[in-house]
Length: 204
Length: 413
View 1 (spheres, rainbow over the protein chains, first blue to last red):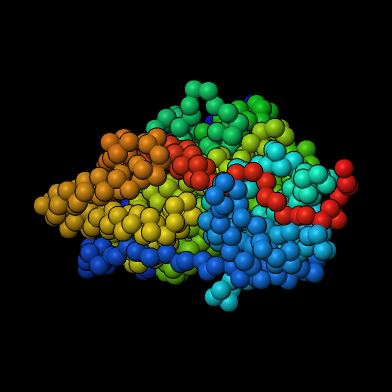
View 2 (cartoon, each protein chain N blue to C red):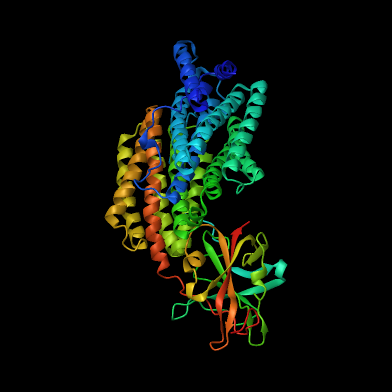
């Protein structure tokens, strides 16, 4: 007999025994119940005093990004969308920026932080982003003094023409973080990189 | 060996015996809906749903065993059995018949061990508790070995063990706290158990499914469907939990109330993520009234105030129309106000019916309705998630950002 079927048979047999003995079983309510679960005399009144939560904890805006493994410690500029529908980028190469039309770090959903890999004058805040390893810790300080920690799950490099908008920005309700910069080969004619480097991190 | 097993079951009393009963007739209504053509990602969410439901039913069964409510024990046990049967069938569909053949008896033993633990707590029988703990440790190892083996190395044995251990730990600790009258701790663990066990379904699916299916599970649309389903299914379960406490007037009411309030905050926070704080605040005002009316209905049922119950129904109709008016635009017209109102009416009617059945001590009927309500939440979550996701997608930034000008980072062409 299969183990699974044997279990069912056992259950059936045991139930039959219990059914036969049912008259001999004490009433449920006659058992020595724990005092903690005994109905209270004025019980229904409790329901009348119930008040549902009408507020929820808000997550403060991010103010600083720290990645110890890369010696990154940057304040965060707020970024929105430009008129052409693309995301705005930080004004300075040494300062990262948070996309403020998306979730705040630690809120359900993907928070997105962008930074330059370099500028015409030197390396940017995310010059070594592609070197991050799985499990590396990323910390984001928030305006209320709290800090939220993420761990790198994946580092990917994709052509800008195939930028995975949904994977980076689309709402999932998972509290995650995306770090985005440029990478790959450099097109001198256009003065820009052909790829983006994207770090996918989960809240620790 | 079989005789020893049977003796052990009988010695635990009717509650423990009943936990063997689950593997009986399948009640379609009590299960998470399965469409005609089901993708692996759909099945993964169904696995999450069934695991979450297992957590709720197991905790409820353990609590009823502790308070000596045999009628509820029998009903919870039957519902848990249907859940086990559905999960075993799904494991077969996802990972093959051989996996299901192994999994079914192991999972049933796991349930038996949990009930034996609750019996030990209820009877304050230290010997029985020690035996139950030993059995639980054994079944944890068996389940962990099964999951790790089925994953072909993708889920390390230690990680599998940790996941199963945490599941059992949540359930046994909530039972301990419940018996001690520490309802705040018991209900905090009740929520943690649901959330962890629900998420365990994703861990297993990611470890056991083929690579292409695993990638799909991480796509935002599937994550949104899964996470919204989790929030709404928990809402239904916690409304039922607080309604039961309101009907019977047990001292766990305040803790149950705090649990549903925690879920309400989480649902509002999710709406904030999707549509911003102003919409979230409007949403929560409506949602909070909805929960208050449902609890008031349970209180009125306990007090036999039929006129008040009618007033609650009228207030709920206002909520249904009001919330539909907020949510319909957020789906970009993918759900009309009428369709949303109809879905919310169905939701409320099931929860009111659950309270009535529970008050009438029709625990089997209450569990059947609870199963239907749980399933309905996943259907609604999917429709809302698809509407919300598409609406939000329309305003996302386009293209890859220009975050480099110096050419220091890569090759030059």
